[in-house]
Image (cartoon, rainbow, N blue to C red; front, side):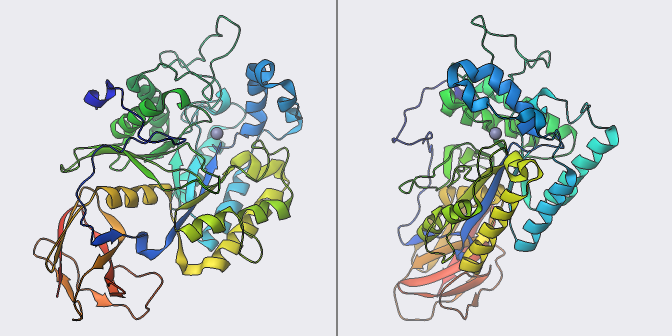
Length: 462
Ligand SMILES: [Zn+2]
């Protein structure tokens, strides 16, 4: 990415995040890529989680010291001293079990040097070796099947000197370099990428593979494009990620789109194109203050996501639009110092979403959404006569296409010469999701769902 790293690229549109799509392939107008399996993606994003350490308790005094003078001391006037130091593994298990039962999937951060308390790949003072090992094992074996693991940079509090592993010294004005402050300002993509790679490497040391990262608060805000390029480089260098993605932006306004952005695409006609997928959330943390000291009233919290009659709330709004609906909380807030209230609100939201939409939605990890959007945006699609040719730089499951095709003859889709698609079968239902390998008539042609393989596939319609 050295070529791109040196350029200053123009912003293409007014948006809360960079929109620098880069290369795009030709896609026949008569073919549209729909949502995966014809279902709206839904996901749950958890920030500020790690192993054992309650970030609410440990971050608060550091944030207060860094920002009381500029952001006002009242913001930090909370009894963090009385909050538990630990969010126990029993809660991780209880939460994860509910999610598995309900089909919930999403993203779960693991901050690698949480609030400078200790290193998850070395020692976590306050907990024994075996407690740390068990906690990591719980994340690896129990959470990872349904949750992407992201670093949320190194400490989520102080910026670390990568040479020494110690926090940077105070600024000359007495302030502190905080990860969620302005450290990235003026930094190159390589410098930001090195910082992210350092965080990823710690997770690699404890066998927690990542395909994405989350920015701690405003990390990267003064260097949005370099954050994307550096982040892509970091994910590629540490984990050889085929489809890198990240979470940073909240698009919670009624008029805001939550479509993932496939950024800085280049070499899309090669075997290993470059790009990174930016996946925004559709809500802020509406469960209360992030630190868990002030959980919101249950009725209000739940209704703001989805009301009891399923007619209102941000989740309803976004799902109706057919855009990915990723909602958000912070792990200390979900735990709420053991109060249980926010976990109950969350359970109510999930049950309403599932009851309202059933198989019209699909719970997905962020990495699955990223992969689908990369395939949707970067697959070259040619439609000539009875033949549709797909050239896909990345493969995905549940690739759903609508093909406008004239004529009254019953369309039949057979495996093309250059692929191994199974024989397609006609679906009975006229609307709703399709399984992989199914097709049906639509008003203007046909809809079909396939396992899209990397490389070239040909569909014959006859
Ligand atoms: Zn955070």
